[in-house]
Amino acid sequence: QLVTAEIIMASESGCPIEFHRIDVEKCDNVFDKDCQGNKYIPFLRADYDRETGHSPNNPREQINKVTSWIDGSFVYSSSEAWANAMRSYVNGSLLIEPIRGFPIRNTMRAPLFNHAVSSAMRTMLTPERLF
Image (cartoon, rainbow, N blue to C red):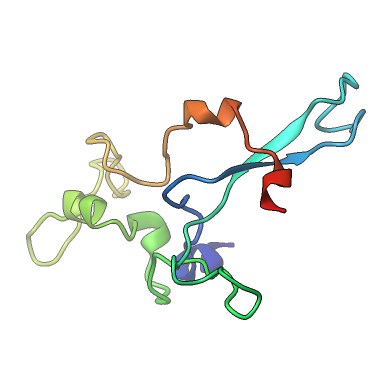
């Protein structure tokens, strides 16, 4: 999983955000234990190349937002804002926590993968609109 996270990042949502849902079977032993029959799993469609996805001969292609290098970006990020915040600007070194030499914590709240959940998540789009 670490190698995959290093070379592929197609998980960020597109713009406009596309909310969808996967309906859960009534009385599912994990997602609908109380047998209400109205449960679903929400998900966002990944960002994609706007020049794709218009026909069967031109399928939608997700955008990979990282390099294919296995370079530790799962720890240090591929975000320029976060990388700059972590640089010490001394001898090419990064900042570290004073205890045990770990990478610094995100106390400056640089944008990473922790995007806020939109309030629009409550009003999910139905899959029928795609057909």
